[in-house]
Every structure is written in structure tokens, then in C-alpha cells.
Image (cartoon, rainbow over the protein chains, first blue to last red):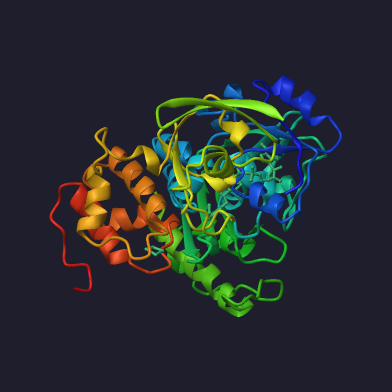
Length: 262
Length: 161
Ligand SMILES: Cc1cc2nc3c(=O)[nH]c(=O)nc-3n(C[C@H](O)[C@H](O)[C@H](O)COP(=O)(O)OP(=O)(O)OC[C@H]3O[C@@H](n4cnc5c(N)ncnc54)[C@H](O)[C@@H]3O)c2cc1C
Ligand code: FES
Ligand code: FES
């Protein structure tokens, strides 16, 4: 790993100043970034730890929904979000393993936008708002493609606000070696309609399954998606599963999520 | 180089470190606490698990400077004050929860964190909790037995006898 200057601001204002330096990069849990730096795929000259910023931590219910600070760990979401948004707490409780959950954060996960990560599906299915040091970004505008987001240089996630659904569930088909989702589906039912977001399937990262959303908005039952098919055209093929296998999984997992929604 | 100070196994320690110095390197190379093992160095295997402020973390993915002021516990801090093995360590020995022993420090640290939160876990909870700790000798059954026994519960016949 190349060496760097390590800074640990204790406020968002100080983090903004630190992130404005040339070659600066944000560090949260380091569960993705540290191994990436060891491989020299990232070589920041200034590493800005966001883990000491109290105003970026915690879970809080407000008028716009459930707000989660960007530096909140998966373990804290698992422990504290359950009373408000059980499906989200359940998702967090099944990310990786206990050590990953004790360090990894929602901000790091949503910024990284790994095509097999869990949180992006919750953000997209909930129509959540990604809050940064500069602006608020709607989920539909935020995820640009695999490992790519609407975040600008030097911009960082200070929190994510989730409108709380009537019912929701996340069902992940584990890739047992990495413990990421081989494929995962998040279904959320709101008074305004149902949203379905799929992770671990597309070459373009997390996406909404529009046909299922329409069918489930009319009839929220597993049988409503029975007649639908998912095109395998742009889906991932790797040694763990073909595009056709993933296309089938999307439908199976959607049905399981609808049946298990609470 | 920047000065870092933390508490390791109850003692306050300070040293000059680089930005890139990992907690695992600080413990092993700086403090000669080589009980914390490096299996993968890619955040996959859990051999390097230590406690930071009571929570289990993979020390190969944490920078020493990021835990400034923290209370760190390693496998060297797990024995009883008189040097005898702690209940969990003794249980690993009694139930043959180790073969080559390489994963054992991480297994013990992860198990201790589980039992602190959940003193009477089910077998399924133990297995779920230890998902991030890989045993290359594949001795999982006896590891699970050891953790259940350490929690004071009857040990089911999960192991290949
Ligand atoms: C063994 C293992 C299993 C895992 N299993 C899963 C799983 O099942 N599901 C899953 O979803 N994930 C999984 N992960 C990933 C885990 O959730 C990470 O926590 C996450 O990908 C990154 O979060 P982090 O806080 O560690 O970020 P870091 O590694 O610190 O940073 C990741 C990237 O985001 C940037 N960044 C960090 N914070 C911010 C911010 N606030 N604003 C803007 N940019 C930021 C960094 O610069 C870096 O580019 C796993 C990881 C491991 C090691
Ligand atoms: S050495 Fe840290 S997880 Fe393997
Ligand atoms: S005892 Fe050999 S790796 Fe677990």
C-alpha cells in the first residue's frame, strides 16, 4: 500500500475542508477501501476518516422518514432500525459477518455501489434520498452504473433518508464465499405503489423491475409476478451463475419477498 | 509519522506510525503481539480478529490511527489474571476446537464477542456469528461445540465423533 496522510475530522465542516485537498479520499469502515488500497487500485494521498464525526452517526425517525447517518455501521442499523423499518434492519443484520458489520457503514456501501451489495437495493426500492455535504439526491438519480454514482469529486454522503413503507422485505440469495448477494431483491409497498429493486444481477448495477412494480401495485401477492419474465440480456454471468440463472432468481426472490413482507 | 496512543490488553501504549500502518501490523510488528494472525490480509478470513472498544473487528482492515484512544484486546489479553486459560480458551482445548491452531485466535475473539452479547446462543446462532471466521482445517463442528460448552450449555452431537 502506498503511504498517505491520515486525517480524522470531528465535524462535517472539517471533513469538507479535508476532502478539498488534492488526492483526498473518504474512509469509513475500510471494509472495501483497505483491501483496495493494498492492491494499489486506490492510492489516495490524504485519507479522510469519517468515523469520528458524531453528527454522521445514528438512526432517527423524522417527518421525511427514517434518517440514518452516513457513518452509521451496519451493526447499529441492525440493532436500532428494527422498530421503524424491520426489512432494513434485517438487511443490515445479514451483511457479511459480525466484524464487517461492526466497521462497515451505510455511507461507504452506498458510495461504493458494488453491483452485488445489499444497501443499494434498499435505497432504490424505498425511493430514499441520499444526503451529501452539498445536496440531496433522489435514489432514482443517484445510481449511475456498476461502482458508479452521482457523487462528485470531494462530495461525501452524510446520511440517507428512507420513507418508511407499509410493508417490505429483502431476500438475498447468498454467494457463500463472499457473503455478498449472488442476487438480492428488495420489495417495498407504499400507499403510492410498490417498488422492486434488484441487486447482484445486472451489469449496470442495481435496477428497478418495472413490470413487477406494476403487477404488485395492482395486486400485492406472489402470484401477481408468476406470469412475468426477466430478460437475461444485460445480466451478469460469472462462475457462480449464468445470466439466465440470475433472471430466474430475480423472479423467485421477488415472490419470496412479497410473501415475507412485513 | 504520527503518534498514536491506545490501550492494548489493559496497558496504555504509544508509538510513531505511518498513515498506512494497519492495526494488525501495529500489534504484531510494533508490540510483538503475534497471537493476532494474518491469514488472508484481504478482510475475508477473520484470523486477525481483535476487540476494539468491546466489538470484534478485523484488524487487517483498520488503520492504527483510526483507533486512537481505543481500548483494544487481543488473544494475549484473554487468559485469566493468573495465566490459566479463560473459559472459552479451555473449552477450545477440551473439545478439540483447534487442529493447526492458525484460525484459533480469531475464533476465540469472535466467540468471546458473541457470548458477551448473547450468553446462551443456539447452535444456529453460533454458526451464523462465526461466518466471518474461516478454518482452513475445516474443524467447524468442534469449534461450535467448544463455544456452546463455553456458554455452559449441553453440547449436541454435532461433531463427527
Ligand atoms: C467479508 C465481507 C463481506 C461483505 N458482505 C457484504 C454483503 O453481504 N452485502 C453488502 O452489501 N456488503 C458486503 N460487504 C461490504 C461491506 O458492507 C462494506 O462495509 C461496504 O462495502 C463499504 O463500506 P465501508 O464503510 O467499509 O466503506 P470503505 O471501505 O471505507 O469505503 C468504500 C468506498 O466508499 C467511499 N466512501 C466511504 N464513505 C463514504 C461516504 N460517507 N461518502 C462518500 N464516499 C464514501 C470510499 O472512499 C471508498 O471508495 C462485505 C465486505 C466484506 C469484507
Ligand atoms: S487476515 Fe484479516 S481477515 Fe484475514
Ligand atoms: S485449526 Fe487450522 S485453520 Fe482452523
